[in-house]
Image (cartoon, rainbow, N blue to C red):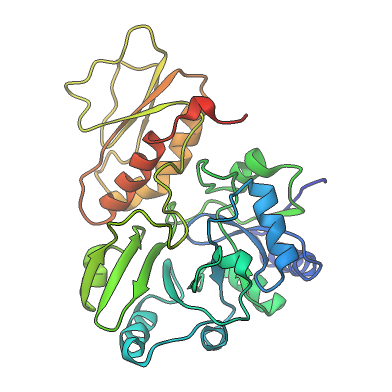
Amino acid sequence: MKTRILPAHTQEECKLAVHAAAQLLREGQTVALPTETVYGLAADALNPAAVMRIFEAKERPRFDPLIVHLPGISWLEQITEIENEARELLNKLIAKFWPGPLTFVLPRKKIVPDLVTAGLRTVAVRMSAHPVFVKTIHEFGRPLAAPSANRFGRISPTTAEHVRDELDGRISLIVDAGATVHGIESTIVAIHPKRLELLRRGPITEEELAEFGEVAVLTDARVRSPGQFPSHYAPRTPLLLIKNADSFAPPREEKCGFLGWRSASNQFLEVRVLSSRGDLREAATNLFRHLRELDHAKLNLIVAEEVPDEGLGRAINDRLRRAANSDARDRPG
């Protein structure tokens, strides 16, 4: 399969790319599209054969559920069962955060294929705010399953070039609209009548959610939504996560790279800094790009420094912990 890349930087380019993407989606093909979080690999969420192509391209295990992106709010009632006791809380969150990087896990209706939900009784849903994604899903007219456009367990892509590195020859089309804004995947919450359960940290922080009610952080090990595997978001190069670089000495025999929070270090061969200004939003935007650059630098080890574990920093540290939990040396090339 030859993978095309179509730019969507101008109005005319966007129109052509959206039309091409929608046509391929109607044919049951997979298309990489930008969202405000990371690039997603999209296919018709209500077509099991199309969804299967996502799993095949990503080498994703079938027991890992997918997020379903909605063309409009009316689709929420068509694919989910909303408990009356939870409706008021859900409506408040939708009014505040949709469209945007917040995913809800809700009881599903039978219209959603088992393959999408990994057989669970719930489905993860969100509405993207990215203009190219919005135009594409509106022209297509149906929900799209769209996990991150990378091979399973690898670093999520924040540019079209990253998608090509991961999936060239595996998918039909990549729509290139430049770098994504948030740089990490959406926040995922399960809605209960009187509380929210935080299943995955992301751009919408625990503090922001707490304004709407009690927030309980998931503690069990069951897979109940996308992005919950302990090993995830990982470079092929082994990654070591440390609290602070000031007292750390890299192994002399290793070719080490460093992913720092606010400052560089001359102890390492390759260095990337998440945010010299100490800005967590900037750090999140840079996270996967810097990890990918260090992964391509032919190192033996990447040493990553934790960021402050507050607000958005908790989501960044979550991704770093999952990356460090992966034995990258056993990953297929």
